[in-house]
Length: 277
Image (cartoon, rainbow, N blue to C red):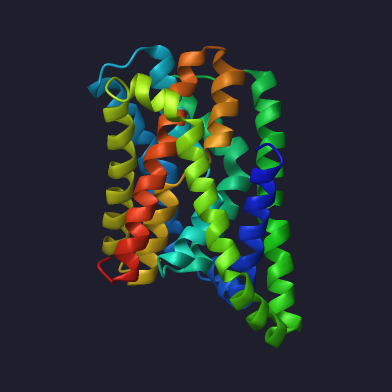
């Protein structure tokens, strides 16, 4: 999985790049209201919600820290392909992933400190390196897909259609692997930490929907914000939980969130394809 998962994610980002216009992506940064609305839900409201839920459910210190870590992590790379399947604004989804990944080394420690959880210097250095690596893993295959579409649009269209089935299978394999690898954590902690994790995921998606509605975003933009806020980078959350806290319990919320967020993503895909959102 250590090799196959990064390759699968890179393949999905390449396929996303084949479908995406470079101008649409640059417009998200040039005219940022939609991007700022989505980021406010993911970067501000989600960690705040995690801190509140940790108190509401009276979680102990390691579990509380783990829940905040999940919320403060950047968006997951699979969210961009999931956004495409949900007929969301893929450019906005991708812009959010790139932004949160690049800024994770700043936003994640800040969110933890504001909620009373600190990150040590050694963990901070590792986080900065992982933040850069995550952004690169997203940006490089995406740029290859964008370049292919820009310089060979006909080939990109044919390749996109040819690779569509393979991309769907890779996405399905990643989701199924997530369920399988985290089955033990799900069974052992579903009734203890599970309610807080589910509330975080569903509450974050609902918060993103509310912010998007309030900001007057279009339906595809709303779907993108909801997908991005719901799908977090669990790998980075697990790294921080292990490096910063040294307690296995701190990783439990991330393991459970990996399962819950994929269920939510599948629901958002189904709803988006039926124009229910």
